[in-house]
Length: 206
Length: 206
Length: 206
Ligand SMILES: [K+]
Ligand SMILES: [K+]
Ligand SMILES: [K+]
Image (tube, rainbow over all chains, first blue to last red):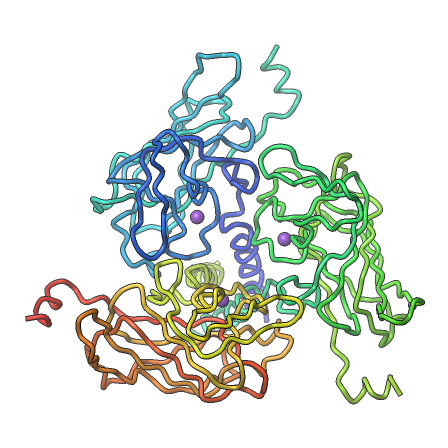
């Protein structure tokens, strides 16, 4: 009976975390909460099956780009595919935050047809975009390698050097993927952090 | 090995419940099953990010009102926002039922940006709407306070006084929320109960 | 502490499986991955609530037919309903595979209003559709009875007689359901198997 109670407690905690968007961590890059892709390298045009309409104008944002700012629910195909084995995406966050960690998610191994399109060497940077200030300080948030042998959602801490620097826009640069020459799939990118409270915000601004 | 078997049994049961809409209880207010919002206090117009189109005519039902009759999948923003710190919603159920419990769900604490928009003091009433009968008996189903410290889906039993009274329409009145002056978010409302079987139904009707 | 560690290990494994599309098995009949319904017996027209538009032309594929090739997330109503207590569906898979198992899923007992529309006696066959070859070898993949008392997603092995025969199209024949005279609901059908590797493929083709 004691074992049952212990086991039940652990199960409930883990399911609660799972039900809370898989990680139980606030995500400031969630599209349903106002975040959006603002720029990206050329999108991959999928031929048959799922149709990705080709955007002739490379300056436009692909209408399916925000797919990478939404849950994937364990389904292969729920990603934003960039052309080639490298590329980049820039994301306007829901609001300005002090970034603490970045999560990159790919489809789970057990349900994937092929994972050669998964990003490999990545770098995330961020800055605070303001209307009237053309010069912005850019922070390198983190560099990492997405590992196909680990959990499909991998979280990386932001570098200490960022301190309490604030960002409202981030950029993911994918330098390489896990083998596909034709495209690189981004299932989901999350940005974790904290909003500055009004007191510290005014302190910063003064 | 015995411990493993016990633990596995508990886990499977809990995941089964989680997979069954989170609670494993039939919901007669589910929009994909035919329930629908028929009336509500003024909807909140969200400015940027997620756009809520403003309905000039206050008698119209907001096109996103049924968002509160659908799963939220742990995602902030998957709610129907009412203007101000109080309001109401009327829902036509899938079918007439003898109500047994009401579940009010808000976004989980761990992934929420801010929970001041969560409903606080609530009251749910119901009645059996019939075409040819202008007068309907209204039942007070339950009154409760949504508690931010408890599980994000909170279930409340229907008052004994309702007995085997049947309802096909319910009304949620939110008297206050957890602090937001601008809006009150309703993530999901569920109505649990049982359909009268044909025998008892004819007994009631005779 | 040891018990906790064991329990936690089991929980994490089971949640990982649950998060990976419920079963943690690759599905070649997933619509978001390119599979699609190509033919079916007459669809059921749902009157009120969820509206199913009636297709006058019986040769057309219903615009909601692919609902049966998508996750249902424990929600009643997320199915493709065929008219009557029997029927069939033909599905073009994402790609040609050597089939190994078939999963038929219905809504979970705990959240269902009524499960009399669940398929009962089923038969799945498959073939390799080629453009220039009018004659195709059809394989009987499996025959089974969907059991309302078991788990809502039931997996059946493909018959040994199929060997390493390849299929890119399958047909589900439902001979009977669990009691409904008006319609038969197909929540989800999955096809598990393996893609032939290029070496064995060229061996087969030579
Ligand atoms: K996604
Ligand atoms: K919702
Ligand atoms: K489905």
